[in-house]
Image (cartoon, chains in turn purple, brown):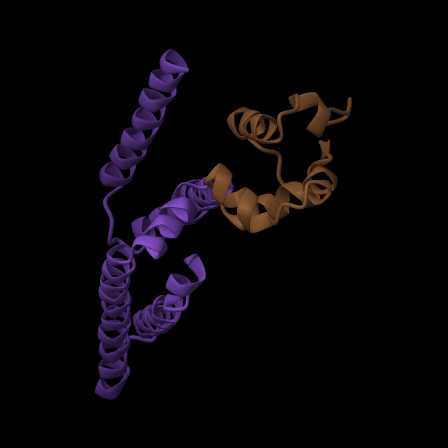
Length: 147
Length: 66
């Protein structure tokens, strides 16, 4: 059942690739400012197309899920797949990996880059970082009490 | 952690699909358990033991370096 849903992962993948191309193009544009107008149009098209693909993927998922839930057998299988402990464990592991990668590598580098590009104020970066640390310790304490 | 799930299931002539349905898990979970790629939660281990009417120790083999 999960495979049936994942078939439409192509929409997300296409959206992501196009959106990334747009972002890369925007960065290149930023570095070599003053490039001709058609280049800006290409960036715009990449952004819009990427977003459209993302949205189409979400809408398709929504309707597919509704279709699955209408059928008793497929809805039962869907619920089993969703709450299956191995699947839950895989999802949790993937989330943890992404969190670690982005929270401690990608976002700090991005924040520093944005600070040096004068697009992000230092106080905003530090405040966000403090909020992140406080939220982390809040849940750490909460779960320590609960478990 | 090693287990005898594959052996016990085959001995009783139960299909992976049927076992998965009875335990309300996916067939992939049963497959991963049998291959030793995934260690079950204590809850699933109890469910398996109850299903086969055996003790957990008869199905799962604890090893020192686990």
